[in-house]
Image (cartoon, rainbow, N blue to C red):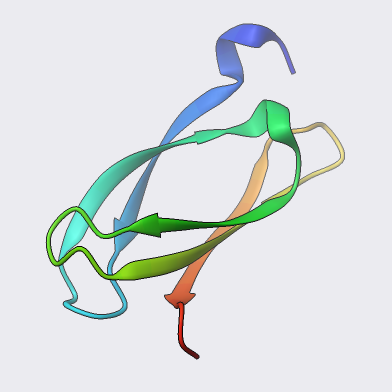
Length: 67
């Protein structure tokens, strides 16, 4: 992975309000889980990033923080 591909845009559907919004994921941090607030309803969303063997985005999943 080169530096130009380290940050990628991802479309996210909020598990609370169902609205879609775009966010940026930093792949240079590797596989990770973090909390990001929904841009629409401000609820905390748990985001999970999985990379493939080449360091590219394999999966981006979201769930409610309280699940």
